[in-house]
Amino acid sequence: MNPPKFVDVGMSFPLSYNVSAEKAIGITTTIPIEIVYAAGYVPIDLNNIFICNRDPDAIVDYAELRSLPRNTCSWIKGLYTSTIKSGIRRIIGVIQGDCSNNHALIEFLQSEGIETIPFSYPHDRERGFLNHQLGLLAERLGVDLEKAHKMKCVLDKVRKTVHEIDRLTWEDDKVTGEENHIWNVSTSDLMGDYLLFNTKALAFREEAINRPKLDYDIRLGYIGVPPICSDLYSFLSKLRVHVVFNEVQRQFSMPYHTDTLTEQYARYTYPYDIFYQIKDIKREIGQRKIDGIIHYVQSFCHRQIYDRLIRKHIDIPILTLDCDRPGKLSGSMRTRIEAFTEMLNNIK
Ligand code: SF4
Image (tube, rainbow, N blue to C red; front, side, top):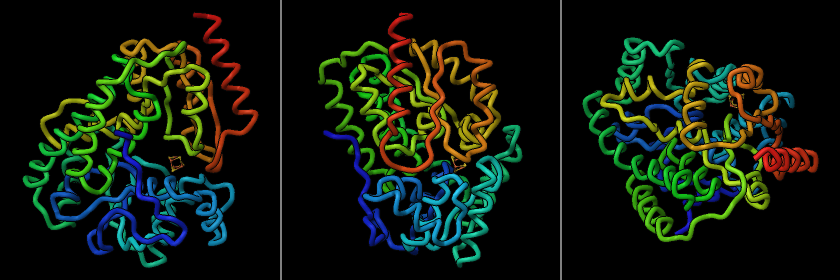
């Protein structure tokens, strides 16, 4: 069985996923979806609506026509158009722990009549603050946290299958880096239907277990936000590179065992400081026996600043790739990736 394919919303932008606009709640980054599901709503990751569209470049163009600046991150422009054109009427906006571009986007969307429900991650992972935020979100959606906690127990089982798919990638060499990317990135909203997601994930896992092992030369880690370019994984695979670690995507799957919602979202690394993320990356480099890292940075993203700190604290070869708009890798990016993998082959 193939990994899940997102519903193609096409340029006519009907609301994808099988849900009415009243029940849909757009998300721009990972938030506690347990609360959304427990309240009877359907979380829809607008990043997926954007990047799975048959013409994501046109989505960016549309946002620019609506006066979002050219020198703004393309993911932000994609989120804008996907919200406006999908028919989604409300979103959960992360106002601390995501990015300043996103803060401005939320206000921009508010000015166009989109209802925004705020959520904040504490900068220092302070449990009391986080617990309070979870309570506020639950109250706003009309559900109590006890019910959301029960939903966590249900979703933990669904995520466990994705953790097994991740293990089949790096330990058993049965799952490609691209499949790993798709399954992990899809956990941000569980495709708006966690039961269907679970069925598909279990079927994929069974199929993967019975495959032959992958044949490759290099074990690579991918860190940074998910790529906006469409052919990075297929290009790496042609170079006999096996991507055994998708850092941020894996974080979306809540990879650690936790007993409470508060602990789960306190251990999730993405909204917090870079040093906390680096600890997780270093642990996985050792565990997964990674030869080199691609650090993907999105043009006009503040996270580019972290590149120096990542290079300072991670002592295996790193290639930093910067990409602006959706589409295929440019010729110069391909040349740099080829040179990097050749270098990794030479030092092995
Ligand atoms: S890539 Fe960076 S700037 Fe763009 S939405 Fe993500 S965090 Fe924000």
